[in-house]
Length: 75
Image (tube, rainbow, N blue to C red; front, side):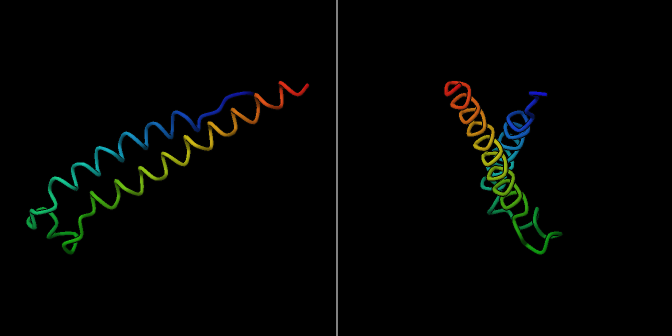
């Protein structure tokens, strides 16, 4: 089977991570929002982690696609 779900999952995590990162950055000066999370900007940190994971999935998908194309050209 040639189904590769890394690209759509990577895009989804990258978009959601970017949204959370921007929201966390914009609201970083409001301590009332982050009082329940021990004053940790959880939106910013979770967004950054999701963005890194999404970009890693996209990179893995593109590298696999490139490797598959090179293998087909060599035959």
